[in-house]
Image (tube, rainbow, N blue to C red; front, side, top):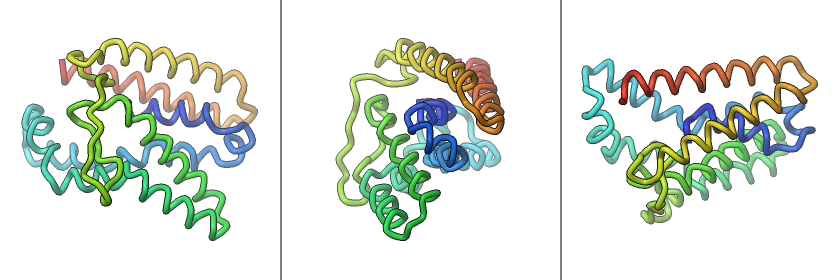
Length: 189
């Protein structure tokens, strides 16, 4: 899924009490698994690499893949959540739960760019028959579905959230989401 979509979907999935008390933990947790990918992209662009090189070669380098996989690892995220829960740290518990949700939603929509979701304990990779971006694996349909869920979910959050901070955050996330689509249309098509 596109990174900003995770923030909207995770806000939708958490109970209202959690959403109202820990919105920042939910949002950061939803975005954090993809931060290494953005750092990789920035580093690659600053190093002068072309888009094809970045996504066909650099992205698949073992060092980068290990970092991407660690941030999407079900066992590592579950252990982090358990440690936060045992330590009585609700903010961190929500953050790691949100990261786990991010990985759960990535699992069924990555084909050739699938993560090792059981890293470092297994090298098994689920190559989904669908992709959130690749038209060869129904990406155009998954993308439209994601767009609908994010826009409808964002509108619902804007209408029902009691805190202006959440409404402001959702507005910013929706703008980033639309900006990402514009960027993707300009750079990758």
